[in-house]
Image (cartoon, rainbow, N blue to C red; front, top):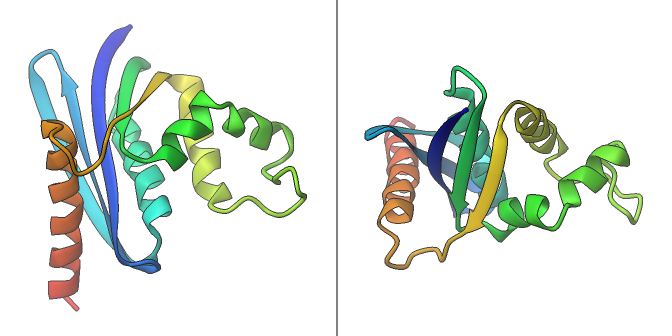
Length: 148
C-alpha cells in the first residue's frame, strides 16, 4: 500500500461566509496542491471538505498521514466520534442531528478505502506545509470574492 502524506486546511471569511480549503498531497517526492472556495459555508465545513477532496484525488487505496490544524476533523477520528455517529445513523448522543453529516458520511466512506492516520498540527505556526495549505485556502477565498 502506497504511503501518502496529506496536509489540509480550511478557512472562512466570516463564519458563515465565503470559505476556502487547501490541500497538499505528497508521495514519493511529488507534490500536488489543490484548493477551491464556495459561498456561504463555515470554517468546519471547509476543514472537512479539504480532507475529502484531497482523498478523492487518490487513484488507489493508500495509507495516508493526514495533518490538520482542525481539532474538529482530527478528533472525530482520534476520539472515535465518527464511528459512534455512523452507528447512530449520524445523530448525536443528545438525539440532535449531526452538523455536517453529509461531509462526515463522505469522509467515513473514504476511510473505508484508505488507511487514515490523523495528526493534529498547530495552526498558523511554523509548520511549513500547514502554512502552504492556509495560503491555498485564503487565496481561494480571495479569488472567489474577486469573481463576484
